[in-house]
Image (cartoon, rainbow, N blue to C red):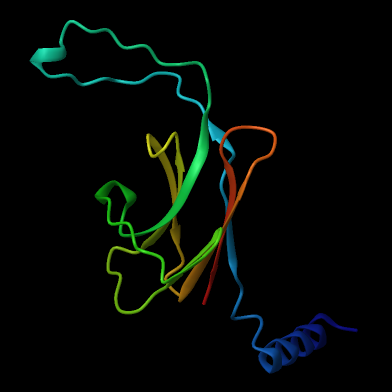
Length: 143
């Protein structure tokens, strides 16, 4: 069969099921990060102290959704919390965008990615790791 015919069949199937435009986006947080250096800023009272960066990894400890860049600390409160599953439902405008964040070492380090503007909700599933410190987490966002 020709390529044009196949595209037409795919488009008809896609539109009838509304699945092509409703793709979910999955964000899987890395289990750990490691710092190779850190810059410590101290006030005068602590100027005689030296800092050392640990060689140990920082394990994933939390996930979150933010209104705007994560550096602005505008964490959104989940709309629903059920055990180890949190859901955020987006209403209104997000002029700076929405961001998914993976948090390490109780928030010492955060990795983030922008969430597609078409997303109307995100669900985070968190589970404890049986073999190491930290958690495993996946965030799924849907239009």
